[in-house]
Structures are given as structure tokens and as C-alpha cells.
Image 1 (cartoon, helix red, strand yellow):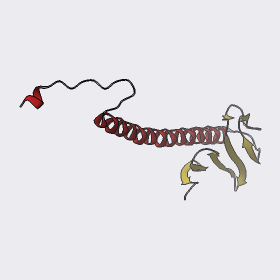
Image 2: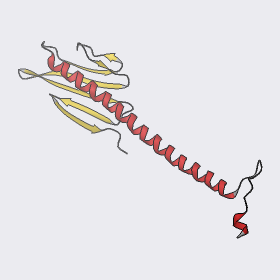
Image 3: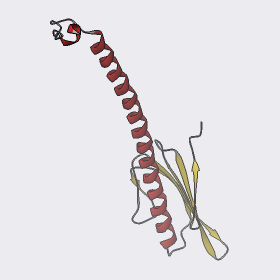
Image 4: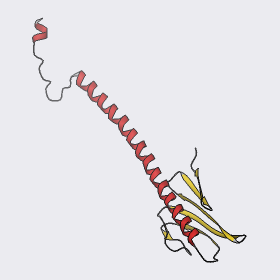
Length: 139
């Protein structure tokens, strides 16, 4: 019983008790795992933000195309940051590439916008008001 009542002396400078070393290694391992999860999560969030920018640019260009009231037909590929020639208003964001087309179809016009961000994972298509999305970076 006296062995349990004795006080443990603190290790001297430069000495480590085996339990403290194991605890330190365990804490470092947990921090490494949490850090890796944080990096992966931030990468996914960043990619989603780039996809949202591309979607916003596609929708803006599509609305501007449908609002045109003249007989202009054209096909343009624009890399942002830039204005879209022949369309008043919308701009293409940095890193986004848009393909904008307006063609005559019968007595009306057909509109088509395709856009993606070079750091994103999706390509968005807007054809005559119908929106489609495709995962551009599979595998």
C-alpha cells in the first residue's frame, strides 16, 4: 500500500515519461487525420463555389439572349473576365468560359449557352430556356 501513496516525482528537464510520449503521438495522429479531412472538405466547397459562378454566368447570359429584340445571330466563345459581345449587361466571371449562340430557327430564334469554370467540376447547358448540368471531371 505504501507504493500507491508515494508521490511521483516530476521528470527532470529533457526526460519524458512513456505515457506522456504515447499521449503526444496520439494527439498528433488525431490532428493529422482532422487536418486531412479539413483540406478535403475545403477543396469540395471551393469546387462547388466555382460551379456556382459558372451556373450564374450561364443563367445571366441566357436571360440576356432571350431579351434581345433584334435580328442578330451570332456564336461567341468568351473567357472571363470579359463582357459578352453583342449582349448588353452580363459579364463572364474570371475563370469561366462561355459559349453563347443565337441562331434563326423558323420565324424565331434558338438560344444556346454552355459554360464551365476551369476549376469547377460541372458544365452547364441552357438551350431555349431549358437548363442541363453535366459533371465535367469524372474520374
